[in-house]
Length: 270
Image 1 (cartoon, helix red, strand yellow):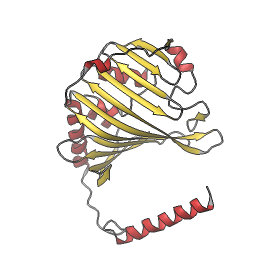
Image 2 (cartoon, helix red, strand yellow):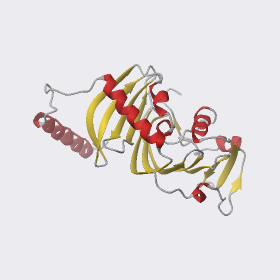
Image 3 (cartoon, helix red, strand yellow):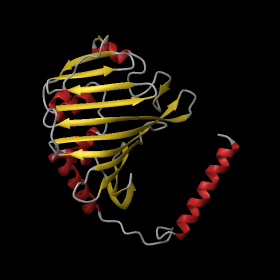
Image 4 (cartoon, one colour):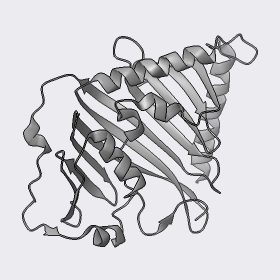
């Protein structure tokens, strides 16, 4: 970090402190925070809304904080899209500085395409989107972006191990006013911003590990949310690009720069 950067950061911090001093939210001011029951109701309203939508599409920006081998904390950023049609079709993309992956599911076959290496693999996983999300997370260690929020009954899963939940008022994400909730389990802290109004969709989701040294933090910010519109089922079919090579899943998993992290990064504590 250069001296100029340090001065800029210090100046920004000073401005932030000054603004807080003039803000109604300054230290010592009364803060209205809803009780735990209200927080749970807000989350339930969101999961009911998302789970009832037969079609959903959105764009996202994700941020995964990691620790390098020489103990430097860095953030890996990526962007992508998600489209789904219940009960059993989904298409997702994720691109960053080291990876460009597409995930396609047509109700029977899951396809993972690595565009940067022009290779793909296919696995038979017949069933619903809920079943696919569970298989990807627990069997293949390749969770979909914001997967926990997309289940038809996400509330039970999100609250299963929660020991503390708070409504922290409101915030603004991408110009949308949101209800701001915070949850704690024994293993992670989670924060969730939910759009206010008739469409209570998730705007931002942050998960921080508490039981891993140099605990990683994953956040996803959702934009351009659309739900309930017509579905083009052709978008959920897979056609291999010219020159693409089909490989076995085990080969894909061994490839460098095909997962969440590039080869020269490690997760904290590993």
